[in-house]
Length: 357
Ligand SMILES: *Cc1c(COP(=O)(O)O)cnc(C)c1O
Image (tube, rainbow, N blue to C red; front, side, top):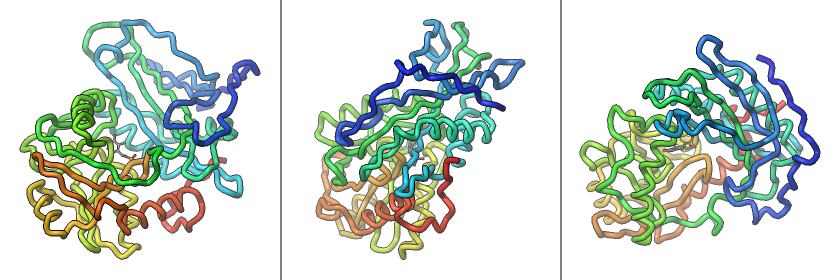
């Protein structure tokens, strides 16, 4: 499918943010966006890259009422040699369609997803920041736009991609966060939508996040929705625990989001001398292992922050420190290696990088 490029009037061009410390995360957006529509009987149509602008949508649109929505998150990096690199974008294309299948939304051809992003990023590459820790965050989204209040899969969708130049996720730097094990609210249940990247999962996680903040913790560690006993995820990241030279993470079970960063950590760890175990992690055993010093480090993984060290964990009013509240050696090594591959400072032995043509 050809993507039409709609001219960008000079007066619609925004000033780029020169000071990397002003970028923040997802606060600024580039001049253009990708927009494709899908209609029953017609399929994907009217693909275009157009000036970034607000949508005019009917207040009755399905997405506003029944949350038929999916999204993705990935990044583009500008390398020192000027090339623009995406990190494993095919994984995002595949996951987008898996999420879409769960929400009864039409699949986006992988080629359209990837080519659309590449063309958009190529046009907007002047927006990619280059200071350490910065990148261009890419947000593909699909929404149901039929203006009808009946509960049903829509007949009209927007698939669009917007771009945001971003600074380091944590303004204060690569410092350990504190997390609280949530034993009341759950993020996902077996058979639910936990494995799909859909806005509703985030809406329903806000309350627990806010209550954890009020208690002085940065993020929530989610337990499984059936027994509230097994570790699932941390905030909107996958969770890893380091036991000496072994790394343990929750096995995918249908309610855990299958992270691209998670998969990358699992593939990278053995090359750094660490074995990886995907299994059930009982929170009671975990607490015992932290108390006894068997757990030496803990971290979360996700595109936005890549790796987030965890320095403190609280469960049922008992707060334990990890790695003396410092960043662990394996956590640091994984962060350095992943970001090194993404930014072209380290060899990409896995073939994870895809250059924008
Ligand atoms: C996006 C997301 C992740 C991380 O996935 P990445 O592909 O590594 O960015 C983890 N958990 C949840 C709930 C997510 O939405």
